[in-house]
Length: 636
Image (cartoon, rainbow, N blue to C red; front, side, top):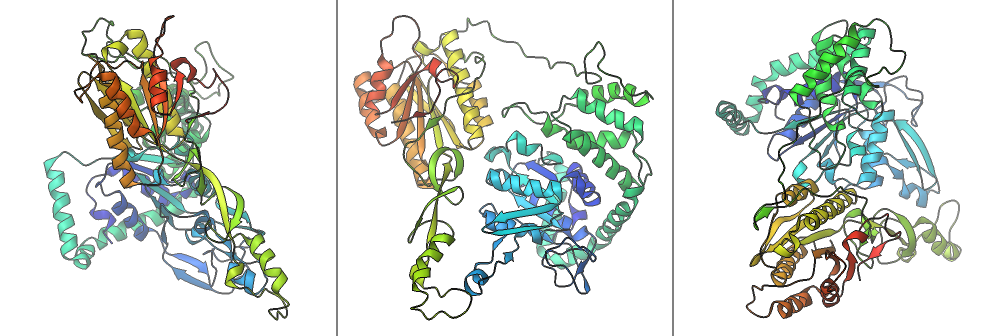
């Protein structure tokens, strides 16, 4: 294993991990960064620094001696072992995470027994989730609940178990592959963004050390063993000092003032900053929390809690942090608690509003950037008809590994349908010579549980950016609608892509990705003007979908075409309108929603004709709001 001390740079990440090692109650670390930045290497190296544990002999949960609330209690004997690093794979099931009924004992011995999962294995160690943003939301909720409460509660299949589950949770993710929901982001105690250094000297040292490790792993680790041993001892010392570190009232007020100034939601941020600051003081060897401890904690605990929108960039500007800490200093020096809000409002100080860049006046030439979008709104649900088998999400109906059980089957499904299996086997027990407890089963008795849940989809936006759409008011409304639909796609865990067409051709503005903020960025930079090559836009969409079908045949697509229906040019060399109808035939097996962007009292109804050619649904631009018309729009 690569030594922790040999890692070059990434000071914030190493500090965040070490503070959690000192005080696991901080709530774990979320590591955001581009690929190839040693995220996994650092996390795996941390486990070797954790102090060894005294555990009850034979305990499946790794409980400390004397633990009375363990399902395996009473224990007999004590053994010593290293702290474990348990990895949760992206494809893990709920059974694998929390545990489940031991089917072998249930079916052969007629007893209910619990088979522990990864939450039990990670107790008093490290639970590492690589690509946590790709993990299903309900699994993330389960492990974050366990991390926050220190216990795992399992209520399923007639089994009711509660066991200790205290661990250092570390998740890594590449933001280019999609974001975590803000509710889940808030559940991680600290967050760190890492990126490769642009300094030639640093990059050179990284290369040298990595090649040295690959050439002689044992020898390389031996050269850094002394520094790792010193870190391990420092963690143990800080853990022992932690209960004696005091948090003065002035620093409590400082923490509250900073969190109020940054307008973070709820009180979790205040508590995390307080715990992290206390751990930082213990790590320094101090007996009391000071301003430097609070500032270090704020840098790690607040960046991901300031996001108000999925398209907001996480992070804290240095000037904003300095202003907040300066204003908070006044509260730290005030010996009297606040009686209530003053004339300046609650929160003990506010940050200056960010300065906006210059905006255009709407009189740009034909080839011009798209105008500022209209305010976003809650979008109606655009759903793919039928039942699919795609990745878990929140858009369309799908057969899934989780969700409500709709029936049992002998050929498909996920997991055992226990009730139907027992019901099928029960009438044959006498003929099979059953004696005593348990059941005599045959292979033909087994029934699988067919579950139905929700899947994510590939939502491909095909946007008409031609001159007929480029009017300031119209394009602003279109941009606002697309941003609203993108936010909806973010919440439903969809993959999104963007195709735009203008002038003489169409282009893929954004290849399909799970990073919807990247899609929003590309749309804001979209150029408008020129003729309307509708046929080329539909052909480009068809080509994108063909490639995506090869990559993931189970992910069903939904095409959202935003146009006024006009076709004034064609890359095929024929009549633009007729070529558009021919191109539409290539998408007849795809769910399509045409958003009619035509405005004014006199409407030509061309978008409806395009929708008919695509065998799709046509809705007006002003009907995309969920408040305009209740219910679900199903693409036909």
